[in-house]
Length: 475
Image (tube, rainbow, N blue to C red; front, top):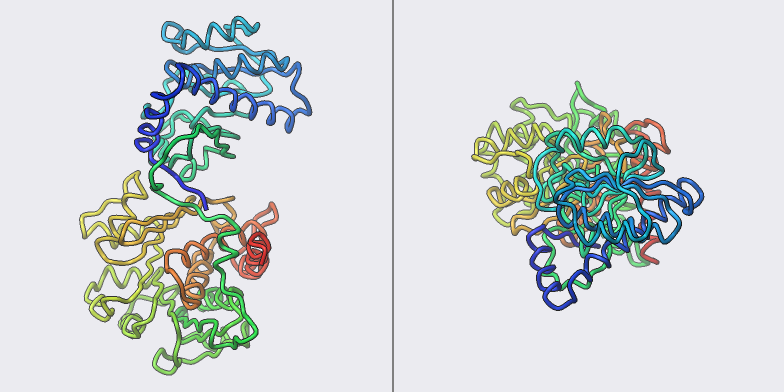
């Protein structure tokens, strides 16, 4: 697990570090890290370093200074370096002098093997200006961003206009929200500056964390002790939602899954190991319920959701279940005050729940998810390219996307089944939901194999994703 800190947190830690180090030392250390990463990218993409061409896009301020110093260090490796000064009268004096001393040039460049983005830093907001945007589009080479891709908000990951799409971002001291909330950051590498940081604002699970937390059977286990997941999903119109949600729960655990609903025959035909009945009342005891995918929004579906919430066990509500909660807020009265409830909305579902409460999604997805979690006393999993998972107490995980292959029909149903199985296994709900999201992302990558895939194939890839996590944890 690694931490993510806000810009304010990092700035405060940098100020403390600057007070105890010689002038310019931190910048040179940061810039050397940029140069090392740039050499690695050149080697990976072109097979060498010496004689390659690097163009620096240099703005004013310290990020421009970092880029200029990095160019100085690259010149020592035999790289041809050209600096394009976007604000010549405000270029970093010491960095520019160092680049010129080492033989770097300032001017116009029409070709590059790598572009280093030193246009703006963490203090900037808003899109790139026209000249900078023109240079970014003109140079058809991979971009290495200094600290963040210019034009992207460092605390929200929002890009309101022209912005850099980086292949690699080299950041200093710690990851900031942009590095996990925006896919424009590319591969993020951190240069250690020895900062004394507070508790992180966000956390990201890694494979080994998931592997350590995932419930595996032991010698004394049976089908009941590993957690029994109940699924209330699907309808005559949408039986596939029931099949996908149930299948994800089956693939995620070697325990037991009970299905209750209109699609019992379809579920049995695809998953014969599932105990399938027609109603929640007949389903039997479970350790967690999943409700909502393909359920419908009529009176019968409303009664089903009420029965699930009234069971008093951890419950994941998705899709039509979220619509029902937004339309009939009295359903919340069926919930036990201490009951764990997980909501898994996409943006439109989030708006249905949040806007009547005065909460707007806006560009700050972390703040919005936290606000809804706190207001409703639930765990909110806000789906997106980077999934945000917020507890009512403010603890928050981010699950960055590894690809876009999960943007396919039924993918959300798969995630819901995974969340239900993870909740049924017990433990910290935030960690359980975070693990389910990680497995979902990884299963999507495995299922796709570099080409478009379907939700059914993602279900079948779940054991492989779990296996990778378990191996990473050394279990």
